[in-house]
Length: 605
Image (tube, rainbow, N blue to C red; front, side):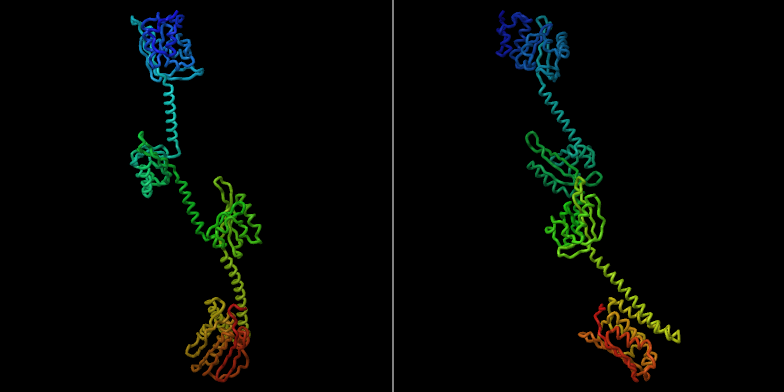
């Protein structure tokens, strides 16, 4: 039977048309025309409303709802319309029924915000959220006949809030656990927020930091640049990175890399800044150590170079340039074998094998070839070079120039040999003097005195050589030393400076000693009226020396019946050592000794 509900229904939506179509005659509610006035009034309020409304009517809680409510029950619409609620809300009935019975039994209004409900409206289970207001529908007698439910699904907002909250919690966790120090501050530099890591970096706790100005913990030398960049950010919003130092609570310094960004308010105005601080102290320390190492390498007098595992030169310092003669741009990239002499060609590959095995090569002496082909004596040490992963990627080579040391060793060997030779000669001379002095001596005391005097003359000659280079001595010094034991006024000494070779120095010293000794015993030096002249001349072009010893004013001289040591020394040994002739003449007026010699250059054998 057709209903006359159309007289009271409002709207053209699906549900209004459904009610007005008259298809309710067989409904468990009966035709709308038979509905109680309170129900019809409630339906007339519900249908045109834009709010989500559902009515549960009677003991069976028959569900009637409007068009805005239909989407909230998904696939249950439209079969749920006009049917008992338990049929279509079965999965949440244990939750929903107590709410509805409470209103039905007590007439009390039940309301809640973001009330969760478990529902399967789209074929799968989900938890949805509603703001609800369940109020009683009363008849003319005030009896509760149904429930007028105004609902507002808030699932999307609640889930958004939950997602936002989760995001904020994750963000707070990230901020809190971040390895970077994170802070927030005002445009005036006041610290407003810091995370745990920021506190660890600067050594203050959060309470101590909040309210401080960033300038309070910034190293003074870094403030000008920070102020400049901060002013630019405040004016333009341009973020900046800056390496700077914080002064920690204990007074120590910590290097950080600061990334500073602008924070804007709802009107887009810059009102705060965010700071991310990363502790780079370890890196800065490593950089400083590396800088010092580079400086040391660059300024080192030793040759320091690096090679890769293919023996190509990869670095070259100033010491290497000075030692080997190659500039860095000439040699880097070339094989290190260009420095290795041909007779040591297997040395470098053997060194590299030790390096690949992780061993260091202790310093050892070897030779290397310079750019001009000259061989250089070096003390070479080699160490492995590792990459960041600890793998060996090459070798570092330090070469110390030991050319001077090797030359000194060579010279030392020569000098030792020469010393051995000279000591032997001295011993031979001493033995000869001893034999000549003591062999036919009748007065032991006089013989010993003569022997000591001759040794003293030899020692003085060696003193003269020691004062020079052991190669020569000046004839003037030799003569002055020979006449030193006697009064200077009895001698007339004249002649140019002449360098006597080492062999002639001792022999001439002995000869002059013997001439002086004989003159003191028998000749001009034995009387107060006697005088001695020692005159010489030298021809540099011919290296010819002429020397004359002449006595006068002494006793009358006669030829000796036999020749002693002095005469033999002058006439034989002296002539041999001086490459010339020498003779003694016993003139009645005084002894004359003439020496003609050719002087070989010092050092000539």
